[in-house]
Image (cartoon, rainbow over all chains, first blue to last red):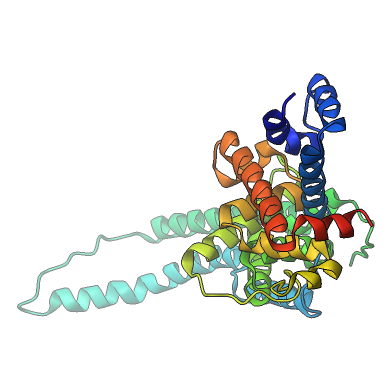
Length: 156
Length: 192
């Protein structure tokens, strides 16, 4: 190995990435070349310093600031339980609002000069079936959400 | 309520954190804050910005933890988040930053003053002056202990580019060390 080859290989020599044969040839050259010994000493100092960089510590309140940010995020984040409660609540609200909406539509459509709107007639039985279906759907969503919440947030 | 100790297995802490356990995440923050802050500091060269980047990295990790599948080591995953946060910050704004004492020391002065200088401090100082890409690659390789392949994937660069940046970075450091301190002074300090 000549000086040029040694200088090209010196980093791999220091980081032990040089193949064994090349390492032996490197060593053989080193014995008789002061310039390359200098190259090796310098690169060893660089690599050793880079390998032993100290771990620095952030300010004392760093962890509490990080965890404080998480809590604030959580306060503003919608909980899955709220979304579960919303399903039956929305269904109930829609059902309760149906009567006033129908009456309002009838009032509007009966005024002269306005576009006539017709509200389809719904029997008591049909309304009951629709209400039941909405409540069952809400309960199914709630049950699915509860399983999801348990698995995601509450298990062990 | 769960009690955690420093030696709690990382996998359990990660799993509980993913399910929203802040106490478990607090242990992870304690465990990784030094590494992340050091990494951010070496990339950004400013204490305040490094703390902000490290804090942001933990908050991003907290938000992304439910999606963490454990395909890579948690540490590598955290380094990736921190690296991306720092690089993104570096691209946003580049204020002139005064190097402070933890990054290295000023070594301008008469040659005889170099005799007692700490060579490591000079090298740290020169690391902070390297181009961002070189400094990032050297930090990830030597400080974080990532392989060439891991750095290449993290930085979205070919492995050959990463290797070249690391080699050129070290060569620059060696040249600058020699230039600033001089071989006679170095020899005396290194072989004393």
